[in-house]
Image (cartoon, helix red, strand yellow):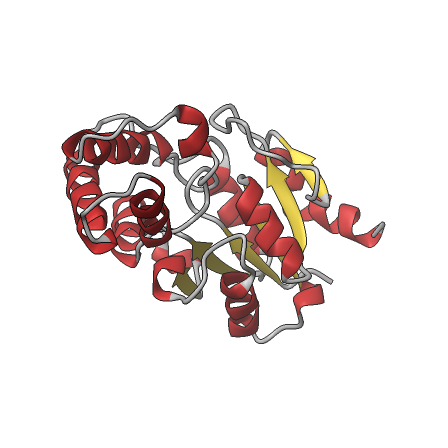
Length: 221
């Protein structure tokens, strides 16, 4: 029986990816490196610090990873305040309310920094629906490592068999499956070059996993 849902944030609850893309490329320009879109997309779902560590190594930069992180975050902070296009993903608020009203525990498990998570939750008044929030930036390993989902599932007080993950990225889906948790792959119009083959079910509309519909899907597993 489904008792808890673990949500990714970027690409599932809110589409901050265009803002992150702009912020990363602002940082790339500041340190004078050319990063292909393919390289950038291959790191979707990883934490900022791990991406910056990889960039430092791959491009032989003299900057400390922490310095790269700060450059990127400063750009993102400005974009977050000023970009009018930042909105919740279509249908996700209805889904959150549906799950909440049916007694499910909701937990956020995102690679985003906790400051970003809190900014999103404050802007869209989401805290009242969620029992806990986890940031991959606070953990030793980032997605595709399963640590964040293991911790998030444990926080619910339920067995992982009673939990479900909603993810939109290759690395996030790998992390959920490595944690042994049923995973919904959300293939949205914002998703690009992501692999959903490991997901237990794939959707392109949150109405397909309403409480009643996902309960029926899980009964057949």
